[in-house]
Length: 214
Image (tube, rainbow, N blue to C red; front, side, top):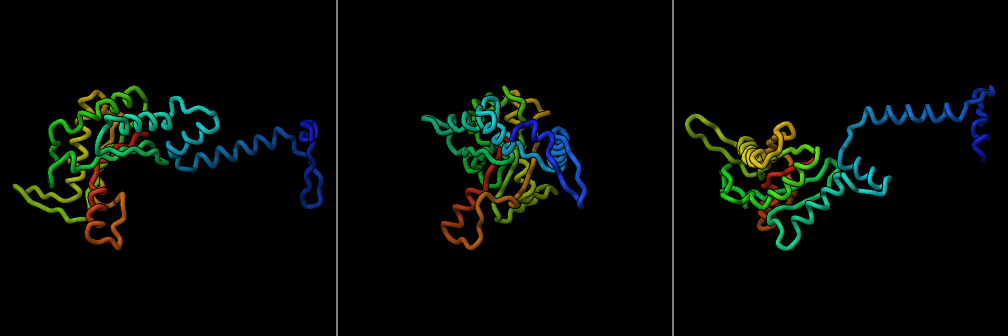
């Protein structure tokens, strides 16, 4: 069908004939898609993955950033105790807390985040933000010192704060950072029906501080 034929497309409704121009049809479709986007939650990772597939280039996107960070982590020598994944929300880095903190502590072990400097430098050269998220396992943690009560909630938040403060020292603007403590409410690995070594391995995976770059 020629474009000129499309412009004179004939529509029937309730027995009446009327004509809608091709331009009007495209305008209505555009309004429809704008409406859908406006009421949808835009997930940065998914959006930039789709954008890259349409443009044929990953340059300047989270797709490119995730590939570069993954290379830094996995090359020899790489960065131990860190995993990288491009999720629908953004680039997710999981840092194992066993390598960063002693049990029940939120004080960073000396030098443990030094290898992360190259990653933070890479992110600092972009406009992306970083959510620093603290996660614990499901084991109940509670202690009380000098009227200060501690739980998995406060532990996850204080550990995230320790990592965030280190990132601040590396020059990331505080306006680009957000701190969240999730306690055990967002496990990486389900513990359902797990026992023994399998359960302990799952709990080890769930104890982490995550950096969500988006």
